Image 1 (cartoon, rainbow, N blue to C red):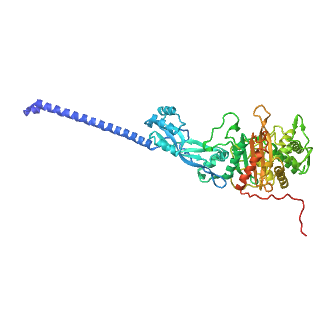
Image 2: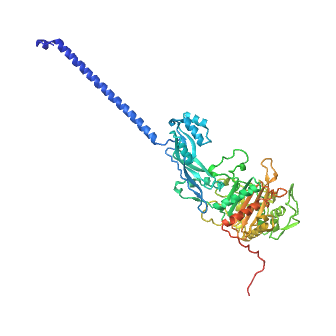
Image 3: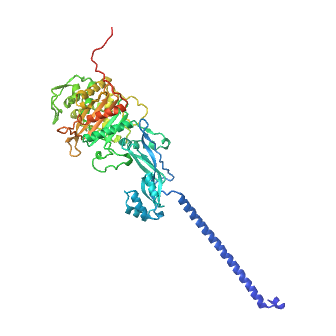
Length: 583
């Protein structure tokens, strides 16, 4: 200021200029600070929007999954091997389909979507759907399996919140045929993009691990059953069950020498494509899921008589012409054993079987004794569950008397006091009649099994077959004769036990016919059992196996024998005892 005055300049003007410059400097610094803050804030907003955009893109590009408990990173294996019959024909396979799910937050018109879904799927409830769509759920399943037509109809709704997930479901192309053998499958662990298919019964469950093995997905499981024969057996059995007014029915067709099950049927049955729910109360046998051939434990009546006679023959106690006292009733304590009709004072061992004498069989069993009878029946498989490859088999152990007394020995000899399944009976008949070698029942085709231990001699086996053949030609199973196939067999009619209170029904029976054909060259064993049959063509209702189970079995043999490759043939004559010699 002093210099300005010395030079003659105005000090006030200089002060004002200095002040202006200071204010401009302050303003410039403030503007720079504000611009820096705006740049930082813009960068923060840009990063935030970038993160949100990336996340939204990732969500949009991925499939949502229903929450489920599983190990981190676990993958759902959807592949499952096919099941085929002995000729390679398809019994069970996989079908690619879709599941329908919803994401309510993405829905635009939930009311319209609910209304249209009920139109496509009448079993859905519109109010419930609306409740789900309006709730807090972000994901919900609507249908686990839909057809291509249903998928297209849902797609046409145009609702962005209705989405589809790929599925590989189990398909049984033959419907109810072989239902109790196959069992069925359901979904296990599920995700949006895959679902695990697991077996719930039958072969599907017994071989679940093998069928689900990804390494064997292309290797079908081959069964011993023949699809054509199985279908024929089921059709005849169903007709017979209706004609004989039976509550249920079962049939087992088995190769006599190998134990391979060619057909196994149980009625009523079900469609494994739409498997019904199991019963939660009442008698389990009333459910169509109940496998009567394996799970049904019945007193099988006079079909057991051949076992007592075969054992006595094997022990050398009798021969076919040995005369047996058949006078009755046979008394043991308070028990009375009677025959269906009076057969006279004596019958030969052969006629004890042909005429089905309870008294004659009981007397033969008394000579055998309880311990030896039990050991013989155990050798035929009547004391343990069958080894067949069904998940239901291990729980089907025969019901044995708690005390195998002499009276038990007598009643068991004619099929009362011991309950077993029709599959047990078929296995025992095959073992007895195939030449005397024990077989084990199987449903899985594989390498030929080694010959089982001998249960009776070849001679005893041949005599037993001759006796059973005479039961058909001149005995209680005369309706079972099929020209050209030399059927042999034994009838069995057992009173049905009451479920409550003990004792037996007076008008309900289990009727069984166990047969072998051809009797002179045993190839197949067939067991047919009817639950509570009544034949009503005559003046009085008839319930015995000769009138009910036998005609059904005969028709079955007539139908399936040609399918099995058996040609009708003339039965060889019985030996005459004369030997031709040359000079």
